[in-house]
Image (cartoon, rainbow, N blue to C red):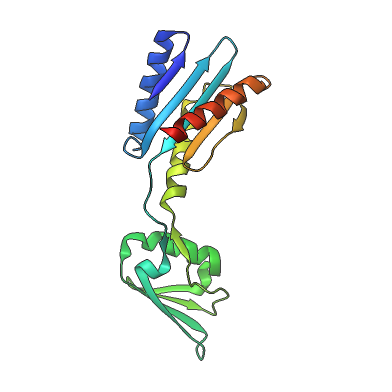
Length: 185
């Protein structure tokens, strides 16, 4: 973790804030590295965070078996692993509507008149969840009033340049350089 600021006391404060936000959001183990550049005289705030690798996405086949009955026009799902059952239910409600989903027991789900094929249905994406948490952390760390933002995120690196004025090209270049630095680390 590196905080670059002309004011060493300010840099220390941002490092403490960063660590506290990571702890609050339980990100400490999920982040490989982070860089912050802040200069209130300009004013500019640049942050780049490299996420750690995440497990593969969880598909419906990873946690359940299912079968479509054409005579009844129903899909029957049997849950083998309940870990992601809430995520599965949410996805099914979005896909088929709540009124078409029944759960007669903890491990059985029935879809009445299914409109979509659930083969390969993405139930949980750890990488997307981690990125959402990192964005949440960044918006907690950004200085108040810095609402002009350029997202420079690439792959597993989430990066932003923020200011309360017009963005300068040199700031965007500095942000891109920080992203490249994290890619190499």
